[in-house]
Image 1 (cartoon, one colour):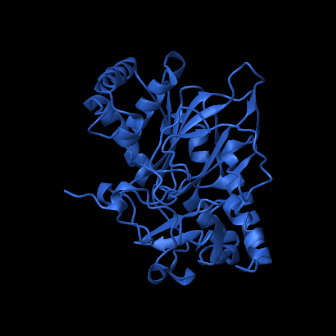
Image 2: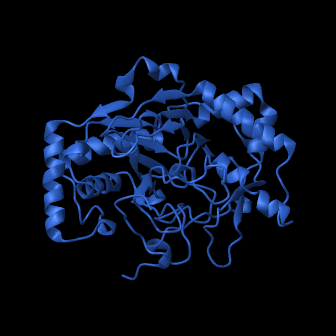
Length: 374
């Protein structure tokens, strides 16, 4: 069977289908269900959002890795067939996947012994774990399906060309360009670099109650998101979208303030209008409200955090790193698509039914898995 190009490559950043955009008046005033939660529900109940690898499960992961390594296959070739996980591991992960996709939307899995493994082994096992949650996506113009959240000394004020994950700066509440994002901690910072999560649907309910004018602005598809130079032939260097969508009976979110705030060069060139004062205020209200409603967590070495991009926003505090020769803060990142065929939410985008929907794709760049940041 011939696999189409849309199945081989990450779809990339697309604009919504105009006919599928619901007006603000059609949005629910209040969302209910397991995707709506408050931080108070979880602060005193870590058992609701923390899981732990058992020695038996770790042993099974290592055995599966040994078989994969013996096959001679490369990291980009990892999938459920080339790196099958034992049934007990799969059962453990699929129960978590259900909570990520259709439940509270965040889980921390503790205890992967990454300090005992070479980076290749940690990366391979992490990629194999990811296959139980979805399909890997390219995260940048270089085709990285294994991302590295690590300071490269880049200037965070140059937001038109710098991705904030490659700096020590604070990352404000946002979601990434997939269905699920995973982070595996290899090394912690000296200070900071801690995580916050918030239910985007509780955030919507709060905005509806406190600032419906802001909610209405966020539901309009007239926000410009910069591509930061990661542009394929024939594409505009930006996409125009909404922050909240109502589609197939669900409210979905898609937002990253750094991609919204970095459009000035396009505005100055007369290519697009700037955002209005009301829109700029809406960004601030969104961030402040998310901070107020958020749950704080700390990733230890060996911890994996999974968060859905459909209904949870996440943030990171600024951090101070270790001085050489101590290892710097380093997290491995996955962007995963959860296709409709695997129970993923329908989205009002032309790639909704694709296997590798979302992500960032520049022309025909092939997928790569570097073992360090670059």
